Image (cartoon, rainbow, N blue to C red):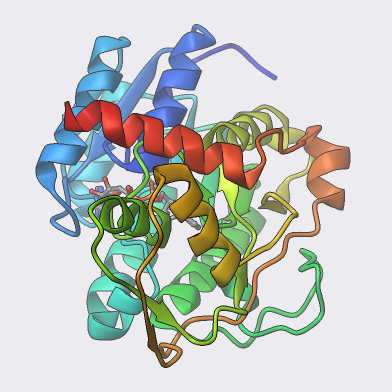
Length: 321
Ligand SMILES: NC(=O)c1ccc[n+]([C@@H]2O[C@H](COP(=O)([O-])OP(=O)(O)OC[C@H]3O[C@@H](n4cnc5c(N)ncnc54)[C@H](O)[C@@H]3O)[C@@H](O)[C@H]2O)c1
């Protein structure tokens, strides 16, 4: 690790970004946060996340990373040592409704950020990818060496594209580059569109929830603090690897039916479930093989699913008052 220069965090007003900003500041690193407050979900929620970052000492800039002029001048002005690029349009189902918007915010913005990082002489870059790149692979757990040529949603395809662009960029520039495949992240500040957040709200109010499929699909949920630990470790260590893809998951998949049961137990209400068919673009399962992250990042998920849901619910309740 070289000198502890400033880190530019993109998507800093988002769920994962705001936690990463706070963790970097807690390590004593200067942080510049950037976000365009994309209307994908409420600006008010993002303003609250950004307020936490500012209160912790983050310099915050509002702007669209797809704007190459804005982004290049941001990097030139702030001269960050490295960048953690988390900004994106997230979510599988909305990407089917707006594939062009997803390619713009994910693929174009990533290329712009990489070019700006090169122009400003950044020494390293970490990018957010996603478990969705594994598509409907049937071999579990998913390993970084498995084929990922069959994404089944525009979102997944956009994230795989980012990994490929990042590889080419690394090959040409030598800039150490990490791509992190996050597996469904839960915890305080979780995006309101994600199922755990949605279900906690609705079940607590006695409202019905929609279950897509028969409840047997499964997700490898990961607690936000574990993700943040993995992001920080990858930022520290990417220089010895050059280009690397790492899974960051919980490695303990939970079925949809079990997730709904847990939500009901945590809020203390019986879930009212409406059954609907599986949605296009949704994968059947996710399950992270963590061998590489364990050995190279000392990554070890510490918070079990149920505790993560309870922490998220405690945060949601505190916000309501
Ligand atoms: N949350 C998960 O479970 C999960 C799983 C896999 C991958 N990821 C990836 O992790 C990253 C962070 O996800 P999140 O859940 O925190 O999402 P989020 O939506 O809460 O945060 C992303 C932020 O990026 C910002 N943004 C979008 N486009 C931008 C642009 N063009 N310029 C500047 N800012 C822009 C948004 O306003 C938002 O605040 C994303 O890349 C996402 O694809 C998340």
